[in-house]
Structures are given as structure tokens and as C-alpha cells.
Image 1: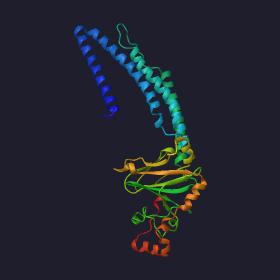
Image 2 (image 1 turned 45 degrees about the horizontal axis):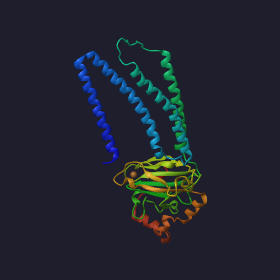
Image 3 (image 1 turned 180 degrees about the horizontal axis):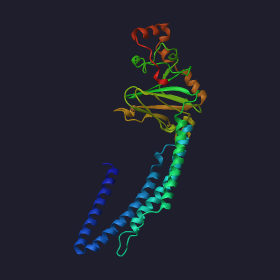
Image 4 (image 1 turned 120 degrees about the horizontal axis):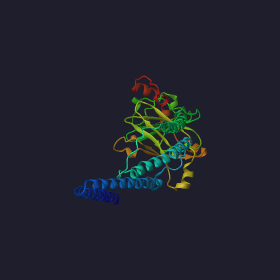
Length: 348
Ligand SMILES: [Cu+2]
């Protein structure tokens, strides 16, 4: 049994013992004198409120500090920095309010516990006070929401025309990453063409498909926008690049997309986080037994390194030798699959 479980059991047992002791002492007091018993019980509860306040506040801040190693590093994308700033502003506004209201709540419960001779003061309402605590939070909320919506439209808006077009297709339990090649245009695909040699169902009669290639790793040049066209073949998956603060669901039948601009190369990150650091793509939607397997390495590099990597890649069309069949591939696709050419769902 792990130390954590033992610790939790110990704390639970101590709490049960304390509860039983207070119950027993209450019962004894009742036997002696009811009024005195009530007073004692009020004191115990008032004390517990204060204890809860102190332990709770210290615990909240201590756990935030304790887990600081688990926080993601500064975002490696342009929009990630905006998200981080919004998150921090929200904390700046909400943490003091959280602390002050909780101190007031528990301290007043402690201070104004029932005592002999004390009469409660009847105070039904105060318009000025209510106006203040409605208008100020409303203005703050409007400012936070305004900034959120403004950034949301920037992030989810159309990708810049110069953005590199890459497609990520999720299925149980792998990702297929298709680059659009020299023309920066993804070829048409058809689900009925999916086979052992055609992971996403590329239609070879479409010229735009002839330079598309499937990559094992995701390579991205620094400082250039990239748009990921996202699909799923079976169940819900989620395209998650934590370091870039990119997260978008992959939904069967409904194409989604996310564009962003990387701002730090893998090499730069390795200087800070050690030579083993790698950016990672992970599935963030529990999609089945081998969900954990849906990971891929992402490499952000300089423009030159990216170009060199691109040169090494071979279009799938060529890899399969379809270019050598001299029009044979086109005939083959038409003969074997007498189907209507469907609209490319990835470009919707
Ligand atoms: Cu998945």
C-alpha cells in the first residue's frame, strides 16, 4: 500500500476519533446541563470553522506551490501567450476575492457564535451595498469575458493564407499526419478508398494528392503559421499540443481545425528542459483501451532545417510507385471504385 493511501487512512481515522470524542463529550454535557451543553457545542463548532479556514487557506496555497513543477512551461505559441495572460489576470482578480470572502465567512461564523445575552441584529437590506457588490463584479466579469471573446475570435478565426496546411486524422489508436506538399493543398479523399496502402483514403485521380505525404513526426518551422485540419475515423478524439496551448476535438464526420504559430524551437526548449525534451501531440479524449498510445513527437525547427526535412520526405503517391504506372493508378481507382467523386471534407 502506498504512503499516500496510508496517509489518507490515518487522517480519516483521526477525524473519526475527534468526531466521536466531541459527540461523547456532548452527550455527557447533556446529561449534566442542557444549556451548558449547547454552549460547549457552539464553541466546538466555532473553533472548527476557524480551523477549517486556516487549514483550507494554507492547504490551497501550499498545494498550488507543491505542484508548481507540474505546471506547463511558458507557451511556445503566439496565441498561447494571450491565453496565459488571460489566465493570470483571472487569477489576479479572483484569488483576492476568494481569500477575503472566505476569511469573512468563517471568521464571522466564529466571532458571532451564539452566546448568552447576545441578540442578533436585524438588518434586512442595504441598496447601496447591493449596488456596489453587483456592479463591480459585473464590470470585472464583462472585462474578462470581453478579452476572452476577443482572443477566441482571433484564435478560431480563418488561418492566414500563408499558413502551412497539415492534416491530422485520428483513429483508434493512432494519428495519421498528412502534409499538403509543395502545392500547400490537401488532395481530395474518400472514406471508401481507405485501405492498407491508403491510410486516409486519398483519391489518386486528384492532382493535389500527388505531392501529399504522410509523416511519422510532426515538423514545423518556427515563426510560421500552421493550420491543422482535424478528422476522426471512428470515435471522438482530441488533438492536444499542451506546450502550444492547442486543443481541438476530432469528431467523426465533422471536420475541425486549429491554426497557430510556434515561437520556440525544440532546440531552444532543450536548453532549458534538458536534452530529452520533446514537444508532444497527445490525444486528450479518452477514446478506448490504447488511448495512451495516441502520441506523436512534434519538432519545431528553423526554416532551413524544416526545408531540409521536407526534401527528405517522399509523396505517398511516389512511395507506392503509382507514378510509374503511367496513368494506371487513375484507371485503377476508377475501375475498382466506381464512385462519385466526393467533396473534400477536410477543406470545409
Ligand atoms: Cu484518442
